Length: 124
Image (cartoon, rainbow, N blue to C red; front, side, top):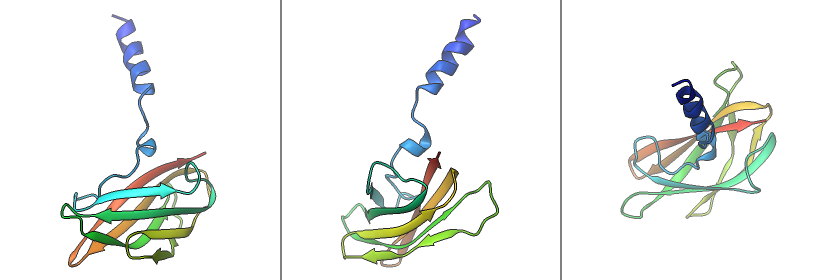
């Protein structure tokens, strides 16, 4: 009986952290999302990635803004410029200056609909 808690802890440690799971949908499920990071993952410093989103009918949603914040700190949110090419957006300057847990919000819009994808990232 004493082994059961240890086994449960071991099983929980082997699962993926939420940060390891790529963003796949916006918060209300309005759009599917695909994010491709230049390099293997986000890191401290300047980051570059592309993001695209689309609805169930295949209509492309435009990335309107990208912001990042550290919920455990009272710092000003970090924002990044978005370059749109008609099918995907490129973000070249999301600067994450500190180690810790970041909450990155991608806001998408298509016509009168909008929704946001929240991406949690842990930086060592």
